[in-house]
Amino acid sequence: MPDTRTRLRAPVLAGGLLVLVAVLLCAVLAGASDLGWQRVLAEIWAQVTGGQSPLSAREAAIVWQLRVPRVLLASIVGAALAVSGATFQGVFRNPLADPYLLGAAAGAGLAATLVVVLAPAVTGWVVGPLPPAAFAGALGGVGLSWLVGRSAGGSTSTLLLAGVAVASFLTAIQTFAQQLDTQTIRQVYTWMLGGLNVTGWRQVAIAVPYVAVAAVVLCLSARLLDVLALGDAEAASLGLRPGRIRLVVLAAASLATAAAVSVSGLIGFVGIVVPHVVRMLAGSSYRVVIPLSLIGGAAFLVLADQLARTIMPGELPLGVVTAFTGAPFFAWILRSSRRRLS
Amino acid sequence: MTALSLRGMRSGYGDCPVVQGVSVEVPDGGWLAIVGPNGAGKSTVLKTVAGLLAAQGEVLIGGRPRLPRKQLARIVGYAPQDPAIPVGLTVTDYVLLGRTPHLGLLARESRHDLSIVEEVLARLDLAPLAGRRIDLLSGGERQRAVLARVLAQRASLLLLDEPTTGLDLGHAQALLELIDRLRREDGITVVSTLHDLTFAAQYADQLLMLDHGTAVAAGAPAEVLTTEALTRYYGASAEVRETSRGELAVLPVRPGSGANPAGADAPPGGTATSGR
Image (tube, rainbow over all chains, first blue to last red; front, side, top):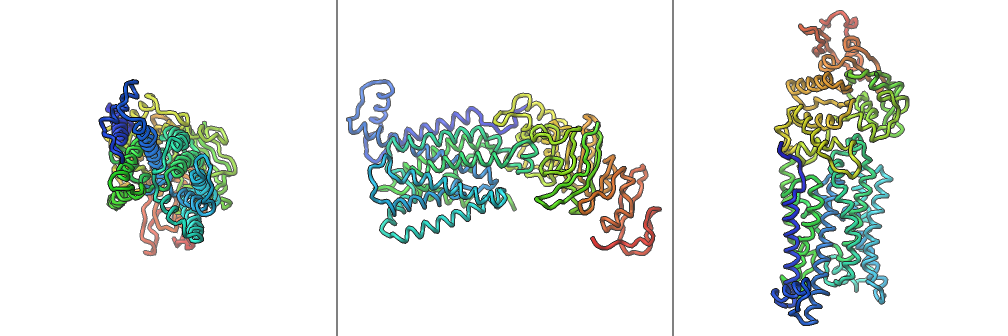
């Protein structure tokens, strides 16, 4: 009997990983300062085999202290946002859900604004006050939505509405705080548009543990997300506790989102676009969608960051690039999902 | 053995009881159909037995009260009236979800689980559709896939909420015949709600009629389905007849068209009680 399951087949996984490695390599080889891709390749080869490097110490520092961490950070943020988006879509059974749905973006935006407005001159921090504030703000926003939603019954629809209420409330405070201090608008605005331009190994080290934990939890929960798609009553009749599963996977996804937001600001559309491309190419079971969203999100954001760095002199905000490529795609999904429903 | 016994069961949503004082015994291998007008609490009884609503009074499944959720799911399979059909899963993916109660929380299905699913699919003539997307199946195929998922659970008590919803006469009949065959072959016990009273009379060996959340009649189909009960609880004008093969059938007749031509058990005067 032929295998009629939707599974992550080895060739697909291998192909996805191959594409990701190729994208990572391309991004490291090409950058703003022209070192010549052959020389960078030779440098990487020299590092791997212990041979003679063709680069000067300064050039080697550009590769290893600027490009490599930036490319890795882009892949980590992309993977985190895409896998969180896939999870949110599964939990809410809504194809248009994204990782910011429950107030993560609004919470992080408020916290970042408050830091910029109230503590602009603080120096001497290990990583600067912005990333931890954004991280806490994102988790705070989601936590507040969860509490409000649970007090209103705890179903997915009340949670969703609670997210809308919390997000607009936090955004209102954020706008007000911003208005009090208009000199910092540009700084806040730049952060909101998202970007990886201040990057070193430190940010990579900050983001990796959270994203790794979330990725493991979500990969293990993939089958449970498929069961949740049946609705709460049926999931419960199959012996599960849908409320608890929702709490665990949303917490994992929000942790990854908060880590991503803390190091890169608000980057939109990755969380919606990537899981949908995966569904169209490889099937809708979360056993496929979760791992391939990790890989696809990483590759997509590395490419988008590459565009942001090189398409124009100077640098485009990363959020602008992802939205510019993602928004038309999003509109197309809307159209095709309407056609499917009607 | 008694597969299910309810004694003075009362349940509902929040503090508001929807059904109360429901008592019934269903023997192993029996088929109980819960009937009654819209809003009588039929689905609520099924959800309560499935463990989805808290119950007061006694709910004994295989003689045991208050089983833990996972253990309950290995004995009781539940198919809601309007099951959510996940977009994009294959029929095999969907039916495999029925193995959930037999798996550890984070475990994957084994070869054994897959062979159970393949067997169920073959039995329900779904094998040719195994790789098709479930959301693209026809109504009849979809209902069979839902039944397959419940059967893959290997439950001995099936709770089917209006299994024939949206099916035409032929497909509804085929599905009920299939359920009856499984019942006879495997000794599975079936509790279903059925709004079609003729089907209820022909397939179930026991009926429970609810009205406004209370049991108003219980017993063999011929005892429960009387013209009087149909008038009184459904506000319907109908005749209960025997077919040429000796099966019961409920036939609607236009109300207010003079004398009730029904048989012996028509109420004198035959006036429909208003108030429903």
